[in-house]
Length: 443
Image (cartoon, rainbow, N blue to C red):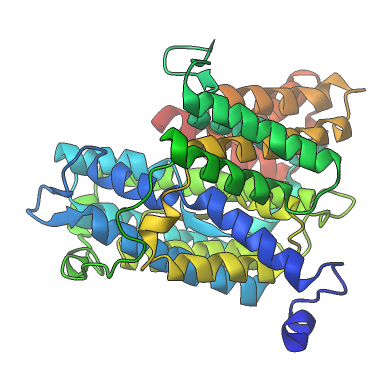
């Protein structure tokens, strides 16, 4: 215990083993939905056990679930020991649905999809090793970096409201069905977390998740698994690991998909790392995260390794904020989350019983905590505030972290150029604007 405390710098970061373990468990419970979402995104959410791609390869949901848990666990452990940050990683939402839909429609083989991810991951690694990703972060204006946390806060709140059913965004903006037991439980969960936080109870978010999950059992909201543990079927995993097809992606469509995968993950990771680091009070006076090159490199390596094991883009999860809000400050939080992912390769039925009514309120509350950063945005100069405003609006209403950040950066450049303040814009931002414009056009 003492060696771990010394290695992860507990005293320096004012934390304890108990706090870190609770934080890691909280992060895992708010991320566990990926073990359901990822196989659904790739194979479809219907009753079928998998999908046969255009090359005749059977990609099963069980194989995707096992590999997602395995790679999420391993790469999160790498984050813990190499970077010593409380960040957890898994397959990101976005690229998985894009590539999954192409695989399901027969437009793309699964091998081709993994080749696209592999190449984008290699680009991540190169940029990270040579410090280019870090350079991009440093040349972005402070106001934009400060606004990232607020923008992601609104995005997380949106996810929580949508997943829990409190709000219905399927056909616009509307309130959910307040006669639904799931919605009522979610509201109760939000109240529980709020009250516990008001009384400064440690682990309020985790307690809220556990309480609502238990209450949901007799109400039929929490579905008890037929079995607690399960030995995964390994026979179908061989069909999707180290499965590549370079020839079929060296074309216009393949390059566009690589571009989308690259920039989607780049700005999603950038936003998440800065936002979670901000909530953990790890940013410096310029809004930068000291040592940011380490989580960037872990993220990049994760995408390359993930592609080799049949996983779409591996990215740092914004749900890591829930662990930070529970007090997590070191890699021990990530270590706990990573170990739980590995354990739940065999206990996936238990992990998946946590309902949206329990995780939704946690996300809403975390979103509330993150938007408090809006007070640090400089509104005294409209040209400085315009970019953050656009970022928050686009990020929230497009339901995309990457879109929000890209739009905010472009808006910041344009408003300064149009008002004669073009010299205030770092030269690198003009170069960055070119691929960002292409991102919107091609995406």
